[in-house]
Image (cartoon, rainbow, N blue to C red; front, side, top):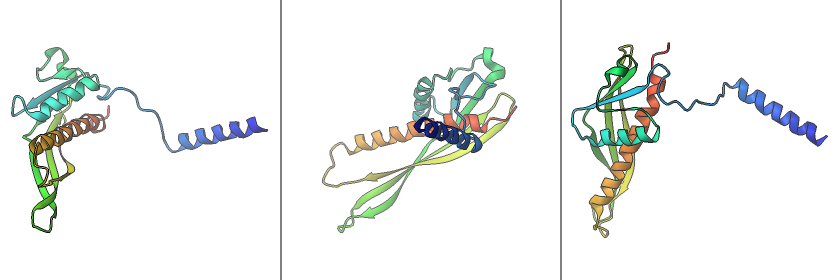
Amino acid sequence: MHTTVRYCAVLLTTLVLASCGFHLRSDKILPSNTNYLHIESTTRNAPLLRALKVRMDVYQIDGGTEAKPVYEDTTITIRLQPEKLDRRLLSVFATGQVAEYELIYSVRYTVTFPDGKQVSNFFEVLREYQDDPDQVLAKSRELNLVLDEMRLDAADRIIRLLSSQSPRN
């Protein structure tokens, strides 16, 4: 009796997952018709470019800043525009000093797929940043760490969006 209930539960779960369209994703991040990711930037050592290279290593993506003629017909090209960092005031202390900011990291880039289709993208990565006037030591270091984290998040997002933006074959 107990085995029958388990069997029915497994069967019901399988049917529910199959009917909602759930399926496991493959381990390939890039679209199936590509195998090389070429990155271009207006600045040779742009921080976002470096973050993208780090994330490409993590995702085991072949590519970089040098174009590979061998992969010419299967290469995705990403052209990064200059990054932009803004901050918005969120709160102030009773003395009028700023207590908290929202950091806004803006990213613009264009993706060119092997078939010549181009997609321009823009998104923002947001973080809250507390500015305590009593703790002034290493504030610039802390801000740089938060900004590096935001760049890595942006690089992850760019890579994850590649497959969904690819033209279907």
